[in-house]
Image 1 (cartoon, rainbow, N blue to C red):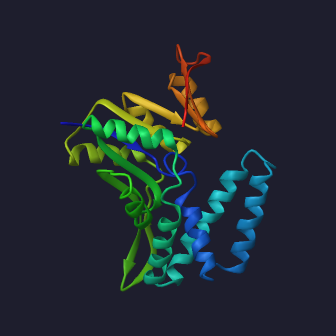
Image 2: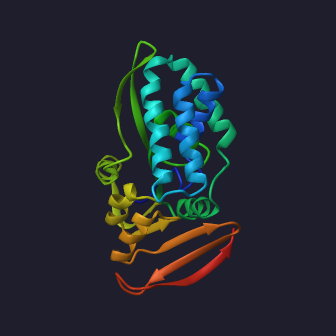
Length: 243
């Protein structure tokens, strides 16, 4: 049986969201409705100026829901061109900590897994740059060169997805790792031996505190690691490194 490490992508390895960068490419092609562009711009400004605690979530949701509604109206071929440009322009925008962790665990024989809520076409091309063994992304159903509007979502129930991968690929939870940054990653963090809350949202920090999961924060050119002696206890800085 093979040990494994599972990584979220957006905000965990990638220093943005593949969804958001795809939206920029679709807008450049004139494929986003003007009302949607205006709504996204307003929510981005609200987030950038930190006008509310939920500003980023509202911005992110506006982008995701906008693209979900848009895709059935454009040919798959146009979408795929935008995907290729998204990866070409952004594939190297990654966090040092998670990139190094992937390299280290890969050298120890771990199977490296990506489970992302971004579209599978984006995920497939992105993870090819970083030697992942297994990957899962959101799947939009296609028929006759067009999107039907139906999808298989992967941004929730990630633990269910990973349990299926464990069966399919003869993996073991012994020594396993998971790295995530939002509440959507709690399921996979809860099931592994070595959970890491990386640049976590407030909601994920509160969950990490309950379990005593380590926190890793990458900021500017420094990476900070914080541990708690006991679940629910205070965190202390245990290490910091240049990145």
